Length: 208
Image 1 (spheres, rainbow, N blue to C red):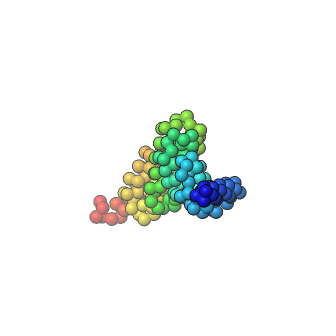
Image 2 (image 1 turned 90 degrees about the vertical axis):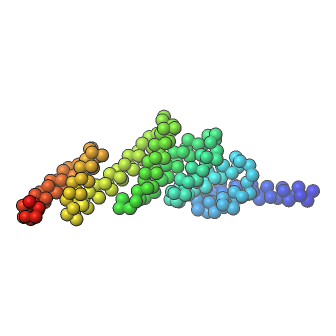
Image 3 (image 1 turned 120 degrees about the horizontal axis):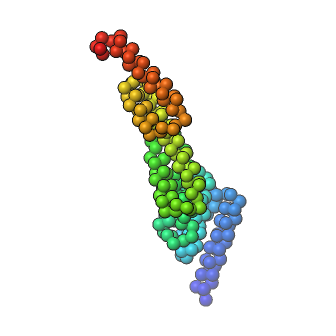
């Protein structure tokens, strides 16, 4: 009888925690909800219960801009619950969370490449999926980020007067991004590089 009462109290406590978390989440108090979820998950034995609150947790991290953590949690959701109806959304959110991470174009772009790979994987698995349009928009934004980084690197060579390196970088840029919005700037920078090299050869006898 005592054991039954204890079990009943434990279940009642779990139910109270679950309801409190849902209320916090619905009020968009995601950080507080996630703090409660962290203490709740070890108590949950039912697979459906765990998946529900792991889902809340992943979105809670996404909404609080912990995009890398959220991406990893969506990834784990796909692996742990491959037959659940949320899998398509989780696969999309894995890549979309990475795409939302604000990466300075002057820094390493590993996260950008990971986001591209994840979103392309989503489109390969769900070519006509519910999130196709958002995935394509995110991919375009990621490609624009890489384009800006590539252009910035080439322009820096020009600024530093490394004209031969700049020409190589700018020509490569033209091949990779033939329709770039900055293509006229690329042409002007190439012209500047050729002009500067010609002037160097004219005034430096050792370069004749």
